[in-house]
Length: 107
Length: 126
Image 1 (cartoon, chains in turn blue, brown):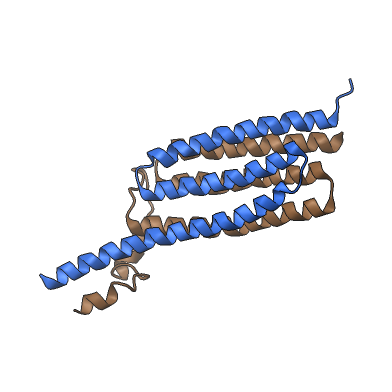
Image 2: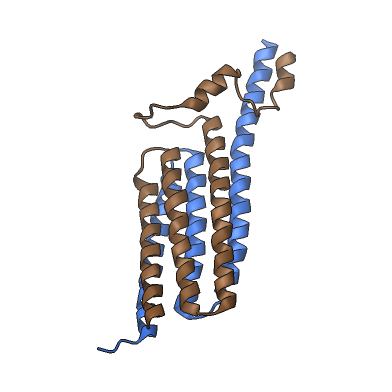
């Protein structure tokens, strides 16, 4: 039996794209439901990693390697975004605590 | 033909790892445990898919780009996870009921609060 290698890769990459979309949807459910802000940040982090994987799988599917450049740029920006969100979580906590301390000092 | 089969296998394995990461994201009980699924399984699955692209393209430039993305992901994922975990803990998340080791809370108690909390120091003197 002779099977075309290109066809195998096409079928596998299509299946991979579907699985990645399903996992992105699951992560999105956590993003919507997440009881606390930290849960949402973790879900966003996972979604950005999944988008990098999706871009790589689409590069295989389309046979166009320039999608890898998009993946590189997106990975850089997503890391900066995650760091910014983590610092935002920490900063808002500090602001709350500083406000509490000021209130306590006056009383 | 052989490289096509290897690429297809790597694609399926990688996307299954990504699916496991997303299922763990949905099903695991608290933020830090969810982060465990998201960081490790997600990075591993993405690495597999990038390796599949490197095998499928069969081109030196593409391989170098794919390896660069993998190395970048392996470098940044722990840093991002550490930052998110620290921020989440200092913010006061609900830990899972069966958590039985919490060494950071003891450390924070011993040093009387948050070591990194420089913002609130001046207001304590007033």
